[in-house]
Image (cartoon, rainbow, N blue to C red):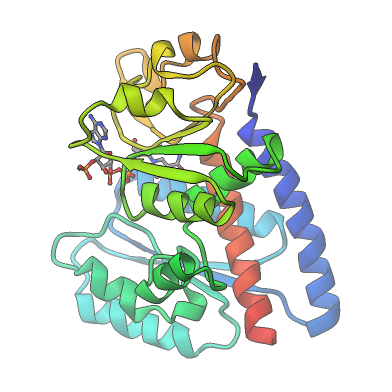
Length: 281
Ligand code: NAP
């Protein structure tokens, strides 16, 4: 079984991006800039943002974090986004989710210029992805996609099953695999026989949020299994896949932690660089 090492894959990607930033700097005399807006003091968001900033600096991006207290008015945030939209030194804008209840998430997402939407959540980017046009792609599915392609460069004709249909994971993941000519099934909480669907799959991407939902007898021999889930349990953080038993049947499997997570942040940096390159065209 191939243990897909997300930390190693992310480190390799960051190294490639670092070289690319050096080349861009030589060509354009400036580097891509990423601004992250962080609202409130939720511990996981603080940790994600700190990691994003550290990784951005490591590859040579210009990065900035703008912090607001939990009670900040929606208008203050929207005005700041408008200001960043106009700033030529900023290639990418990310507003860390979740947001406080009084702030309209969709309004925030739609205020970010699609060209600077490094999360790939703007409806314009969602539409471009599903139409097969150039766009920012949400970072977690992009990371999963890159890891799958490393294991199996030719995905044409493979049967892929997404577990979960969120805008963040399942839907964009399905689009990426469809573009690779996979036959894609998207499952969700109302799917009648999830085990039977999974047993058909050459590739399973689990993004559900249920600890160890996917068991060994759901997985076809030699399937590639990508575990997006992050679940806090009594025995620590576990994924949506029962790692120990599935590792005995799968061809390749991501661990949790150390699989999809590190690639997500590296893909945010990749998206920032792609936004910069498109803005220079
Ligand atoms: P979400 O928005 O809550 O979506 C969960 C999806 O799972 C929904 O589509 C839901 O179906 C489906 N589902 C729920 N119960 C199911 C069941 N019994 N059988 C089949 N499908 C079921 O979650 P998300 O934001 O996509 O996140 C999913 C997991 O990934 C979470 O554990 C999250 O923490 C983790 N995550 C990890 C990363 C990373 O970087 N590694 C990034 C983002 C998220 P319905 O649509 O019918 O409700």
